[in-house]
Image 1 (cartoon, one colour):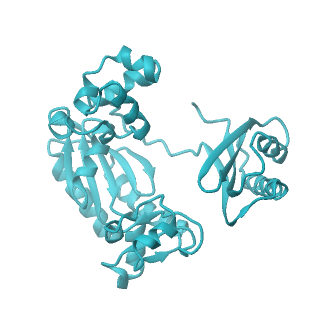
Image 2 (cartoon, helix red, strand yellow):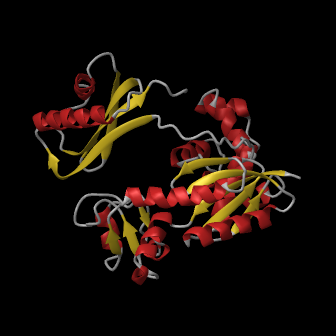
Image 3 (cartoon, one colour):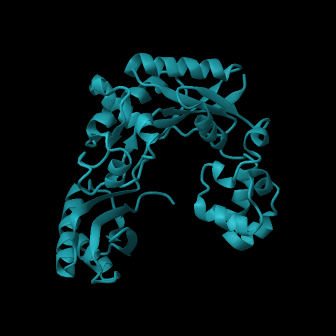
Length: 335
């Protein structure tokens, strides 16, 4: 039998979970984010397909979402409930006996060996539907990259196979950001080199790209342009690389003394939540108004709160601040 990588992705997961709890919302535009109040600062965690038709998307400020879709139903984030539902889904995947690599609440890779991956994928989706009443899409590939991209072509609630055989037929004439892992800045740099499609990226000279993107990233871009990638599904349980807290303030903070006090408070909170794992660095995040985000970190050699205060001295004071965060980066995570 042939080995395959499946990418299972729950469709509009958070919104779908909320609609299950509130069936009267089915078919209506639903937005989940922050504390559910679009008059306050916060960002969209997810939007239902109906809300997306109005231009609402993840990461968008709630106020912008409300302007684009005044009739949207706004709901607060309930992370504990999403975790519980996610565990039900992952349990269904693990019942297959295949290795499962969890990527987040709503997606995972599954490694299977079968001569009919479409039937396997449809059966898996049906099992998830029966256990949770949630729809999912399944991408099939010869590696993780292919499977992850394939899922997008299967949405919603469908199955799609993307392999080396149809890679260029499906993606060849598309822009490079059709590939998982390539963003807008990389696309702009590639365009400056005359590379505007996946096919052109796949045919690019690795040395030429290494000169622009670096000796590791340049050749890697050519490889993923060719659809090559890791095919091993790692079932090792996820281990967090860091732990932190952040707060978005409803009114900008202009007094840097207050900023220092808030960083100290967040540092104490984060320090109190650590579970004994060694911490290598303390990182402070500042988002200036309107949306300029800067981070600085220092090695942890003594007191956690003092390290956070030291990191804060690396920022430019005086500018209005809308968000502050403190994060502990663990020392026992391999780079």
